[in-house]
Length: 281
Image (tube, rainbow, N blue to C red; front, side):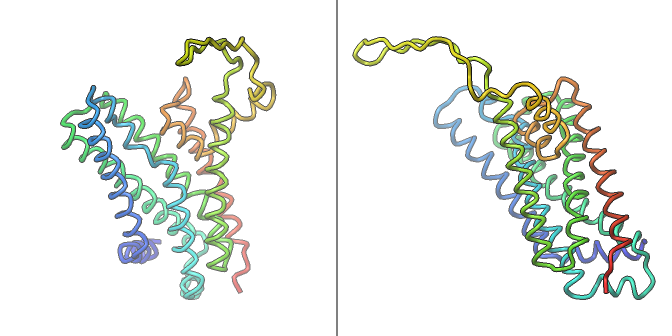
């Protein structure tokens, strides 16, 4: 197992795609903070309205797509260049191979995420010169986000491992991440719909008054559908990531890491079992 881990991490440090992802996240974080500062200089106001440590988690959902691309190509290459078969030929067990791959994929996803968080904080503190939230609150959110990102890697590894075709595996894992991201947007949009549209009055430039009475929102999600949406909003990792980005954590924040941990355990167990049974001939 230790030899597999050393080989995997040596390959990771030499992987151009991994470093490309790291550079992309660094530049994206730098650009985000810089644009906020330019807006502050242009429009004025309170600094905390332009920079918050919540910006450090602004790409948590995007990490799902970036990690999917990396994992799909990283694992797919093991099949395409014969590395997977060679590991088995020299006597490594399938369980050891799977968990060594899981370790490097989790590490890569976490590092990609941490680069964005760290860059946002460092550049933000240099430019804005202050920390606008409680350290304990930030660290709590950071811990939850790290568990969510770990869940991303745990979800995507089985897909990449069970599909031996590199192109098919990469396509499938990217499509899965996109579907989960769209699901998160759809659920958030549905749960954000108000039950009632309040009455309002508008006076135009000519002094004419237009009024609309209070009315029920036909797009409001209710009943069983709402319960399903709320459950998925707590369980699906991309939904959890969206909740962090939107500062929309549940009343009991412990729900998020608990469900993420459950996803990690279930997908890892399923992936390891299915990989043991997979025909690699």
